[in-house]
Amino acid sequence: MSFGRTAAGRRSWVAFVLLSATFFMLLVDFSIVSIALPSIETELHLTASQGQWIVSTYAIFLAGFLMLTGRCADLYGRYRFFVAGLAIFTVASFLGGLARDGTFLIAMRAVQGLGAAIVNPAALAIVLSMFPPGPQRSRAIALWGTIGSAGIAAGMLFGGVLVQYFGWRSVLFVNVPFAIAIGALVPFFVARDHGLDERPKLDVGGSIFLTGALITFVYTIESIPSRGFLSVPTLAGLLVTVALLAMLARAERRADVPILSPRLFRYPDLLSGAAVVMLQPMSYAGVLLFASMYAQRVSGYSPLAAGLAFLPSSLIVSFVASPLTMPIARAIGVRAMGIVASAVMILGEAILLFMQPSTSYWAAIFPATCIGGFGGMLAYQSGMIAGLGHVDDADEGSASAALSFALQLGIGFGVAFGAAAEELRANLLLRAGNLSSVALAAGLHAAFWVSAIFGVATLAAVFALRNAAKAEIPLRHYLPFGKLHHRAAVTQP
Image 1: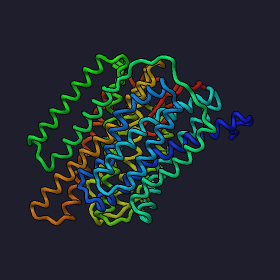
Image 2: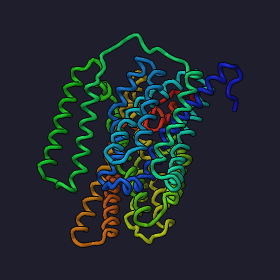
Image 3: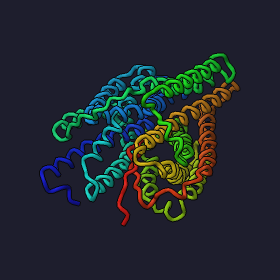
Image 4: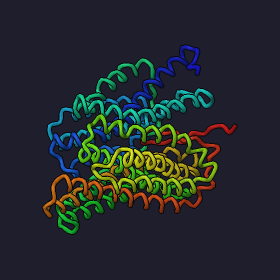
């Protein structure tokens, strides 16, 4: 593969390496924290519903500010926002590694999510602007997707190694030298831009109300095991959530540039595609997290063994399911692919319902994660393809951000509901006099049931894709950017 023969071409590829290294770091961060979570909960004395905030807070803040920060990067300069987001993410990673209690760590995860929301769209926009349409851009897109796939798999392996030999704090500290090196080199290779001349009034209030509503809702869900379904705090939390959503709707009506353009609602399959994109991670993100916890806290796996246990499924998702998405979609259609894939995902998840502490890895975790992960990736991609299949070029950025928001929302909600079910079931068994080990195993099984239920909901949402057959599959390539996806036109052979 030629990387450019001129000095300018070589400079562009160095810049690409730096930007893709950031992308790799952000993808590693999610999977690496999943492996470290049992150790974090043990050392900081967190319950399941408290520990889930370490994952869901990051997802919520990334989702809540993603659409606003993407627009800001276009208006005020992508380079400026990339550097700012990288700095915020780095500082939050360092401080999070110093955390002595769960509250401070969760706060730093929120700041990390904000930093990721700033750096994510800026980095991808810079990459696409560096390479003109043609072979060079196609080469960059292919490499970008490969790097992203490698990041997901590497997080599982690195997480196990780091936690096993250096403790859970190392999974946060490892970001710091990596990000500092990128930040030191970026000024020499990445060109500065100055944004656009227009300066519309941005909907900052809408993003704040949206994030506040999400946090309040998740907090209400995670408090149900200790407070009850119909307790005053639970009902008050739901009322506050509704009030914040009402304030969001009011802010959106008055905003010059709302975070969610009303034009998006006229596109066929965008809303149903977003439902699929949200429900699939609500189902499968919980499987990964709670299966990792079962392996370490019930079956006695070391962190390294747990990381290795989930590595095969990560490789299958990244290097088998993802590349097969477009060939399968073209062969049988997007909707049919989503239906079959959702059923396969549910089948894989169902295996975990029969797992016992003594069940071998090859009989439970390996088939469940490999089968469930393969089907889950294809189901997720069916929602992405259908949701973006009819969107005009002018609205692609907003539509992609909306679907990315749905994905992050699904991760946060799936972990929150699973953790609440786990703690509720475990508490019932503990009050009945069962051993803590028995209660923990039963609680994690309850979380697996929640994932399976959301899997069935994903299948139902796929049936709502009515216009997916008309999606322009042969003319489009979907470029994954971790939690953000953009559609890039390619020339039909």
